[in-house]
Length: 60
Image (cartoon, rainbow, N blue to C red):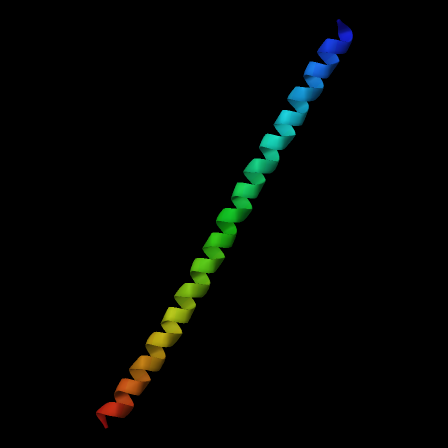
């Protein structure tokens, strides 16, 4: 009977560790997505600046 309890506790511990790893993975994925969005925003701002400069040249 003691072995079954130990096995059950081991399974619960393993499940908690797996759940913890899943939460960490999800957090990392959210951070990666935020970085990607930041990079896209920076690229769009750079393109906007270039287009504004081209428009100014064309106006002259």
